[in-house]
Image (cartoon, rainbow, N blue to C red; front, side):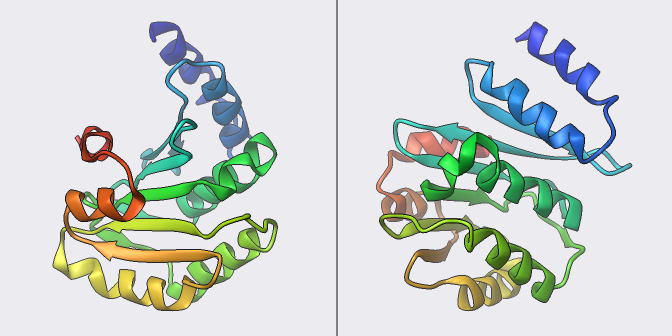
Length: 178
């Protein structure tokens, strides 16, 4: 893992947006399949863990969601690995989120643009873990605008409910939220 962090330091010197591609490619070479990005001058971080066995993406959002972070996340899901992860179910941990610096129209248009690139064989389940009440308004708006036949979004405030919805072991999600 030390070697991974050494390589990641070198990647940090690459200008954004090439940074996203370099980090994603670097993560495929590691055993834990973690895609990490340090974005913007404030060095905010999001992580995307891939559990290929369960066909599950585990996304952890930092305290502030920016357009650069959203773009990086969508590229990691839809563009990397020939879009292989686009059909995976998703657990998005919003427990640290405090600020959303993009409007819902921008969020929805970006997400729709990426979704048009894929036609999953079965509906993709997306569980938004939102334990704080003050950001649920955004989440419910996201759910109402972005749920459709191919992408089913649920906003849940307990890991038990998230695990049940995604049909995975709660321990898998609990480890991600730490």
